[in-house]
Length: 222
Image (cartoon, rainbow, N blue to C red):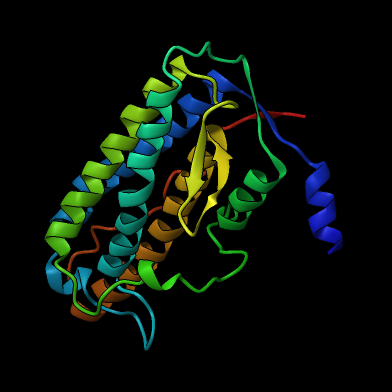
């Protein structure tokens, strides 16, 4: 309860252009990883589960794609409704948006602060089609990059996007972008761990490695 109350007092303030440019850079890095590394891996490696109850890389992608199918059209629709709004110099995160963002964001060393159970409608199947999922994931990242570019022309504080698990709750556009990119980073790390295990187990060339883009580019102002 104390941490929750403290969080309400820590409101992050960003330069809007700097925030969008940082998130765009992260998205481009993740596109490059998916194309130059993950597309070279076999379906066997992509679908290999590192342990009982642990997701494979393909299952991580299926989970991310399920969120993208909701949030990307929702963001586009919300932005279209407020077309012509003058962009604000600063984006001020809401306490709830900042809470969701921090909850999803991995640590700088790649560790996950808190594991969470996925909502039922976002849980992946057992043996997904890895090639199809990877193609959709790349397409979704490209759409996200386009929306981040277009968002330079709108007010990140005024546009509101409904939350997938509770549509009656709406987050600021800037908070939605932060949450979505942190969620992607979180599960790219999970997929990387699964791939390292699978490459070792299947004795394939370790093409996947490294870390996803995290938050270094998104500087804030207190």
